[in-house]
Length: 129
Image (cartoon, rainbow, N blue to C red; front, side, top):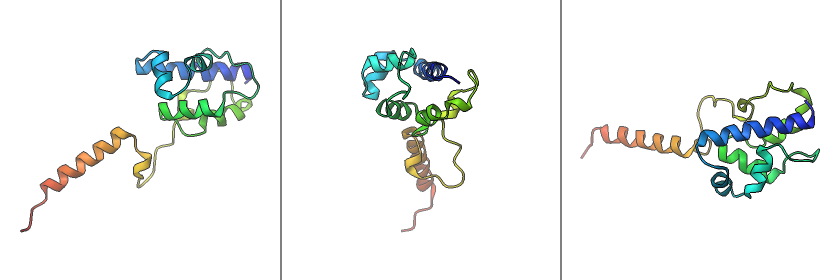
């Protein structure tokens, strides 16, 4: 995959993720803590550097969409291994956790659901005393 194709891939995947939120670019950029134009440049694949997107930008995008930390940089550094059109957002997701999961690995919603379940189960236990 060429640099241009890799940028197009990142742009398309990032734009599709934003569109699924139902929020406009300005709103998402504000929530990410990046400039609107920075997000627009990424989504439109207008970046003109062989270094790819800035680490600060990719880190915030990854965190916002729940992608694996460093996944965009990893893709960029290995872009020559991929065929254009074969990369999907799934590449940026964590693998399914095996066994016990740490609270830090859960989304806020998953953590709230887990705590809710534990309180329900606690209240169902017989009380002694």
